[in-house]
Image (cartoon, rainbow, N blue to C red; front, top):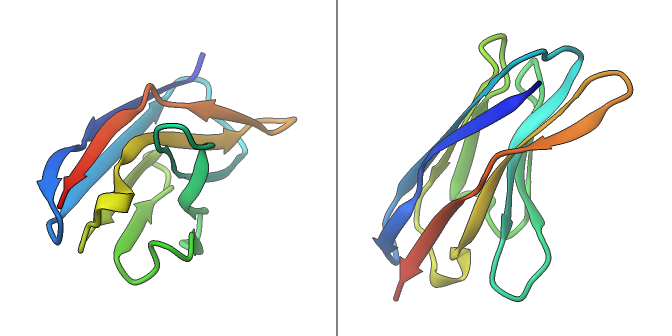
Length: 117
């Protein structure tokens, strides 16, 4: 069984920073990527950023230049450093692991990020 445990999140003023961390444990093999998604109230879940083994990253256009993802290594951890936060970044952030054969998605429980104006 695979578990994803998230930490970080909270309330911050616009322009501030937060750091999210996620650690995956269990029977993990054939990792495709680790990353973060978010879901704002009344909206669909969307990609924030992903990282694959070897370090290649992918970001949503809305966070490029402000957020930085790291990890996805043999320790099965991933971190999202969020800078210059905006009120529109307010959402529940979910850690994601895509792994296994056949590949499937695993999700954390979600952590709330609230950015006040």
